[in-house]
Length: 294
View 1 (cartoon, rainbow, N blue to C red):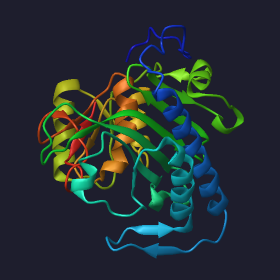
View 2: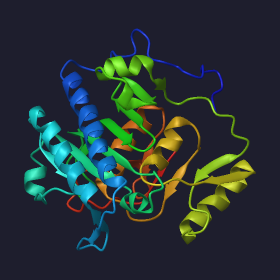
View 3: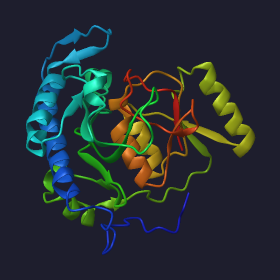
View 4: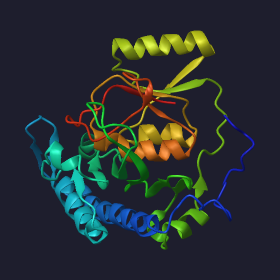
């Protein structure tokens, strides 16, 4: 890890040059939407909530629904379409006509929410049609991302060319994305890792994950494993607390897009294992290919 960066490498003059004027209100709206969703989630978190089961057998709670509604309301003024895990299904033909859109997971880590372990997030990504031909591997890329962990009150945010940031005690601080970045940590932050650190479950590993760990042991010697719920796994790599996050299991586009934007601006990559290129989005199927964040 790079130990030359000061512990709080806060934003300085010139670091915001990558944000065009048109992105400023969009970033501000995304941050406010994430915080509003967090308030709704926490309002349910301490109650005796019930759990439903969706068609794909994944859990759904009142917090998922309320967070979705809060985000949809907060982003309405942006005029951009919203593709949300808890929203209506949108046909590919319509989606492929979007130049920009929001890709949202109102509550990423519902299982963690149910366990009440605090390791869940609100994920909001601003997506833009990329310059490559549309195809089965997608047609869009994330250009900004906001990821909020309500229980930890940690806000991660990034925009293309402007850097990635982590803000603690986010609800006690106000202001625009610019103003928040001025007092936030610029990612990555220094970590003294004494082993190559991989984000992976210690108890449930696929054969592919085991093979990846074995390869890293050959390349780097000592390997350490760390674990975390939801898109916070991507943030561990973006922050610098881990070196890699291999994902040899199903995820959806809204699970990764916000974290992908944050990882990009922290100098990391989210690589589609199928193509060995950065992950693309807005596919016919919204299921991601396997990937590695590194």
